Length: 156
Image (cartoon, rainbow, N blue to C red; front, side, top):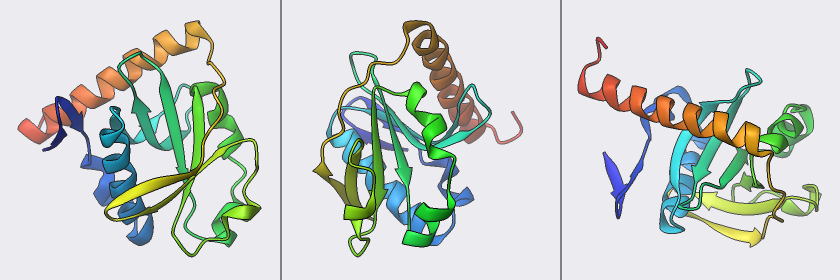
């Protein structure tokens, strides 16, 4: 299992993602780990949607990173606004050749590759509701623990 300090970085779901999205997810997880976040890939939210990458910092704040591999991917995806209530900061992560100027200015932007991600536009802080935060802490912990259980015993 990859680790950054004492923060476990979960990549179990990497195999579920295809091609470039999986590569970007790996770089994003590495970058979030370097920033002091524990990160999970493909975390289900309370809405039934799954966020591409969710990070949790030492103060209990969430960041969601939505991966967009192409302009067509961005233009045809209408789900990402559903994620905003589930984080304190929201980023789009795109490959280096993506025209990131087309992304909404109200959200952060990361340029990512397999080895890391660089913040090119910081995400503003929009604190999530505390009641939702408590439920999401539990969801984050349970999903992370379940993934570790499956790694220890695939039959679990």
